[in-house]
Length: 229
Image (cartoon, rainbow, N blue to C red; front, side):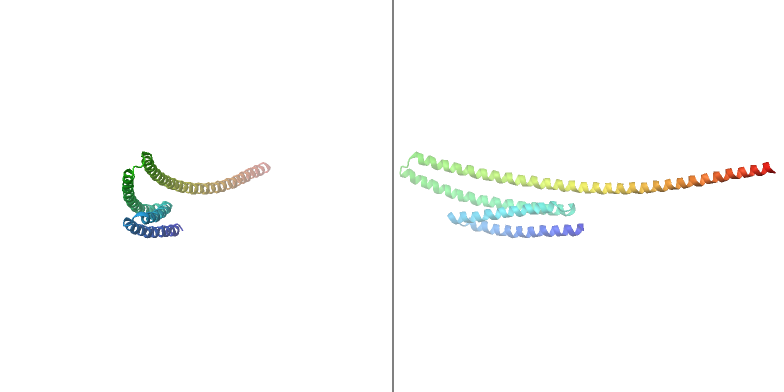
């Protein structure tokens, strides 16, 4: 039964693995296409890629939980394979960040050109200050989103580790239950042996008592015959 269960769960992992490989290849093509785009088209493409990255994260988490629930012999192999997929996903995320940085650089250049035109038109310093403040707020929001994603990934890793510990504790409890069941069987056998010995001792007592009674009766008869004759 254990072999059938492991095989079934391995097939589940294989299904997630196929979905991830297809999604990874698609994201790689989309990154290449996004690099050649500009403006609103690039933003739209990056939005699609971000959605795909979230789906990839979900598949990685599912594969991780599935691998950790298997027997140790299968789990080690699947976790090693999973580390490669995590590295691949990190590379995709780095590529998306690079594309975004390039896009931000172009946007910043456009803003600087616009700022130059504003200067040439003698726009007030207050407007330039608001523009710089907006840029700073945008950078702070990006940093917060990055930190939130990092915290989420760390929380997921902790959750996976807790599930693994719970699985190991469950195996230990099952083993202890089997051991206690074996002790109960031995106690039952011991009780049966002691009961049999007790019955045998009682039977032997009756036999000895009967022999002693017969011996006393024989002695009385012998004495009777000697006294009467």
